[in-house]
Amino acid sequence: PERDVILQERLERIDNEPGAKLGEAMSAAQFLNSPYRLPVIGWRHEMEQYTTQDALTFYKRFYAPDNAVLVVGGDVTASEVKTLAEKYFGPLPRHGIAPRERLQEPEPNAARRLTLSDERVRQPYLLRRYLAPSYRTNEASATPGNEPYALAVLAEILGGGSAGRLYRDMVIGKQTALSVGADYDGGAYDLDSFTFYGTPRQGGDMAALEAALDQQIAALLKDGVTDQEVADAKHRLEISAIKARDSVSGPTFIVAEALGKGRKLADVQAWPDRINEVTQADVMQAARQVLRVENSVTGILLPKAAQEASQ
Image (tube, rainbow, N blue to C red; front, side, top):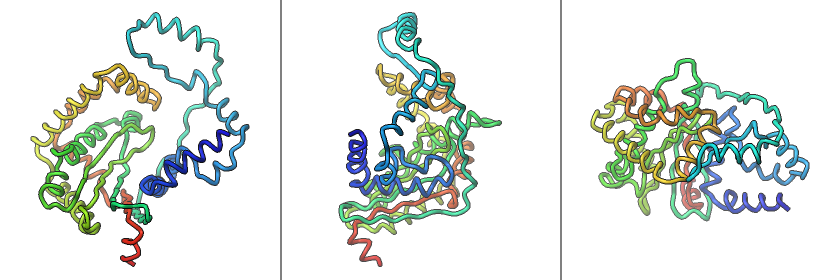
């Protein structure tokens, strides 16, 4: 019965959602060797073959106290939590979980491009991803730097809502886009992505939208960013970090996710300081390292009629 449930979930969230199908195809194209090329929920043809024994085997292999992170937030004390944890989790045996041995991505040498057309699409969409280091891969490297923190600042400069460069130029100024932005999370266990996205105005030209985005990236790499842009972006990120801690669940989730992905509590606590240390030179070094054509995958989502007309 649970197999039917997840098949239905895939149907609703991916197979019937053109945007999700494009994202899935882009991950498969972007990651050549990493497990990130595989959808978390699985490919339909494999899901259809799952058995009860498959589920039990997976559960027995991975669901163990030595492969878990427990974070408790609220009006509690450490001694109370420890007592309850020892009572309920203490009797559970360790499984001897093996260290994570991950396949690593080869150096990219070719840009990748996908176009998906679907009659359910009402608004064309552009998505571009560049392979980028994550916080964990940076911290685990032999010579940790601040590239992920610089990328976070760069994403805020470019895509920080109505204050971002892209919005001001492409939506308000040239009016080539209905919406546009940039994003970098950095929370992956392995390599992450620096992402651009945008939609053209109603009846707009997708080629013009992509050309305008390319111009923005080229101008960034040629002319750089200003010290004031860096300072403003860092200030906005600082405000966001304060707001993220302004609840019980917010910090709990942040800490649990970071620890589950191989980071340390000290890394999470140091995030605001590391962001504050980012300079204009750091941002441009990170931009030139990541925003390379051969490092990218571009996805175009079109209504079926638009795709047929272009052929």
